[in-house]
Image (tube, rainbow, N blue to C red):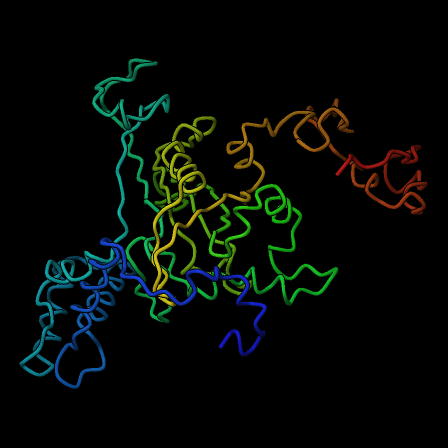
Length: 385
């Protein structure tokens, strides 16, 4: 369909030697497909819902409305009595969880030092005390979701695949199609950005494979108990693929919670300590890749991923980058060319009138000595891009 719409040029994005070769899924994906097929049986004869869809909906409602287990048990029992007798409806929430268990993403719980000095992870998992501060075994939990994709699905269902990124394969290759359809001088997709082009020009072997994924990472803290309850700062770290069409890049089904850093306090400068498992995973996806199954072409291939950029507010940016976002040199672009100054009566740093340097050299605002900084004309040029 894509070739009919866009011509044979799209075919050049796929390797000639493997285009028509069908392969069996790798063992992990095959096991998942078998589980998925077994769970697709109808709830009862003539039912529009499958056992899997009913179980996933009940689980979703429980989480969304915070229903107790007993409430879910009663609802399941009531539904079982309403529908025909010969049905496969789960009678309890425990049975429902067993149906959807195969769909959950693999995750790992990692303990951390109470002060955030280190993680009890890998070769340090057996330690009972922090090797830096000697902190007790009262550890802080860090939950990591392993986000390696195992298969690309062309299904429209939101049930997804174990460890999968869920978008359709052809959508994941959207950036390659976009290069064909791009209008010069427009910014219609992340692939038009300078960062994307720089990555493609620097790592041509990575850019030559249209299935390789460009990722964005974002994080921020929130109070899990609300504004008027106990103070508790929880930091989710979300990873999202940008190979998708612009309308899907930031949609909920394609945003993956890869790391969850629970409170009770802000991680501050120790955020890099808690992000070690995720960084290790991203390095592996960049250097080695992971075996993935493409459902549309029925082929196994080695998928790699690159972290292209991060998205955050300014305080979280300081935690992610290690740059001090306070004081006169808060801007990492201006650095020593900053034009901030100290307010003697306000006792703080101000960047008032720092925007005029970005105006064209002949702009009238540059010569205005009354509307902005008093008795001063702006003659400086902006920092180098």
